[in-house]
Amino acid sequence: MAEKKTYCIKTETLARFAKALGHPARIAIMKFLAKQETCYFGDIHEELPIAQATVSQHLKELKDAGLIQGEIETPKVKYCIVRENWEYAKELFTEFFQTEICKDKDCCQ
Image 1 (cartoon, rainbow, N blue to C red):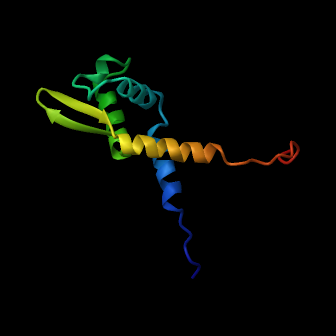
Image 2 (image 1 turned 120 degrees about the horizontal axis):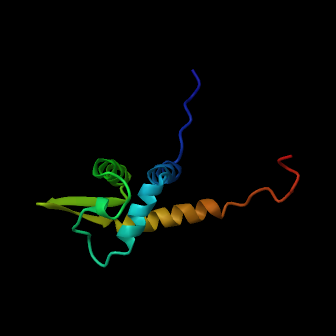
């Protein structure tokens, strides 16, 4: 039986971050949270043009990827960017986009 190939942890992490950021609403949420001086104690759905249930799903995706954290403090939920993972995502995306591509302009023709 052939040995199953696996991806390295950095590649899997980059893919997880990319998937979590793969929707305009999630990008908007991250931009909104990045502008906050402290954790946000409000209803993010008031800041976006989508329904509250939809915002909740997007927040869950970002939280599952480790990009944000949230704590319930009745009646609101507190949301913050996980700074360590924000910096790690920046590092991984930078490394990925600095990958040299074929310099021959005809290589993909």
